Every structure is written in structure tokens, then in C-alpha cells.
Image 1 (cartoon, rainbow, N blue to C red):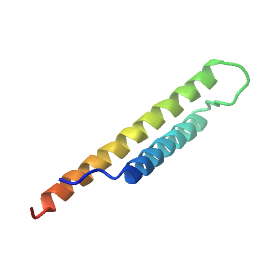
Image 2 (tube, one colour):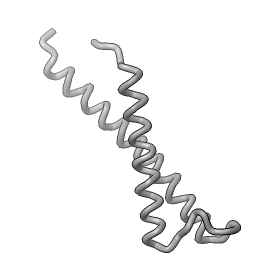
Image 3 (cartoon, rainbow, N blue to C red):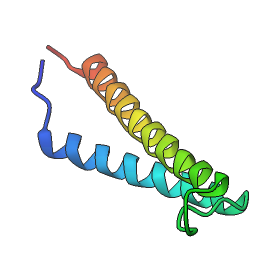
Image 4 (tube, rainbow, N blue to C red):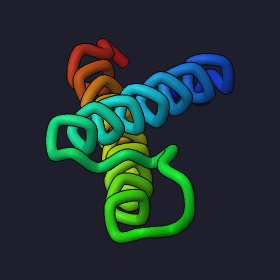
Length: 79
């Protein structure tokens, strides 16, 4: 059993979170939700919600990917 590499974990978490947050931002823009509008109207709160959900989803996907890689490495490990 190998120990996890903190650098790979950190980079994959960061890429997943930022990528998901950007996907949420652009999905909001396509729906007409602007997170940078003045005040806290429904459009800005909806956009903020999509960015948060996208970031969390991207982080979850990054961790799922790492778990799949770890399982694949364990299957091919000759020991």
C-alpha cells in the first residue's frame, strides 16, 4: 500500500474546485445570473449558489478521480 502524495491531492483538489466553480459561473451567465450585480437580488444569489455548487461538485469529482486511480493502481500492483 502506498502513501498518498500531498502534492497530487492538493493540485487535483484545486483544479477540480476552480474548474467546477468556473463551470458554475458560466452556467449562471448563460442563465442570466450575474454574481457581480449590485446588491443581493435573486439573480446574484442564484449565481453565487451555482458557483458554490459547481466548486463543490468539481472537488467531489477530483476526489472520485483520485479514488479510481488508487483502485486501478491497487489492481495492477504485483505485491
